[in-house]
Image 1: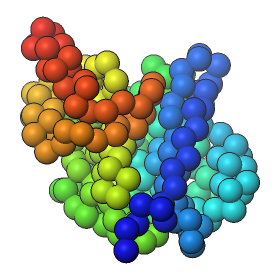
Image 2: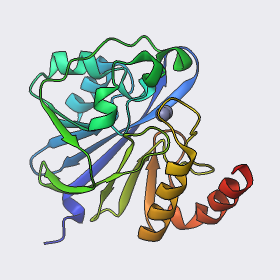
Image 3: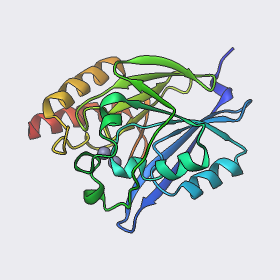
Image 4: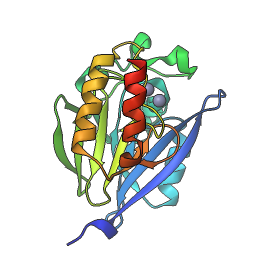
Length: 224
Ligand SMILES: [Zn+2]
Ligand SMILES: [Zn+2]
């Protein structure tokens, strides 16, 4: 059976702190079971719970594309509300999640609580996982941070790109654990593996990867 009509995506743009810095939060869910996966709990756990509740969704998993404060600021509060929720994260960024030098709390100017994660699913290589009856490919994409990942859902042909690729550029590589060489390898890998795929980034508007490859390659070459 085609899964296409069984899976929904909710996109929310949440304003981080008062700086006007907006992060996209995505909720992926099965329409039949109403079980949900939240990608990047950026800000305001109560608002995220309100969105889940108003759609009758039960939060089962949280996927962290990387450990920057503007993607995890609601995590501690959310896990207090839904402690049984499992968190999926790359082991490098799990290690660094409370490291202020790495999570960039001060750069993003977010009020970030220390988080302790009890139910964690750590990844350290590309894996396919079935979460809530949804098949996901979790792909390691170091460059922006060492433990950055992107998430691909085949039936919708959607790639959640975190801060690795945006509609007009790639993620910055000058922050702690970032690497220009890793980003080059990551872009080479993603551009080889994917073409006509809808991308849902951590910031800004959605785009199709095939429309931005050339621009991003040129930009990388120019900056390199
Ligand atoms: Zn980031
Ligand atoms: Zn970000």
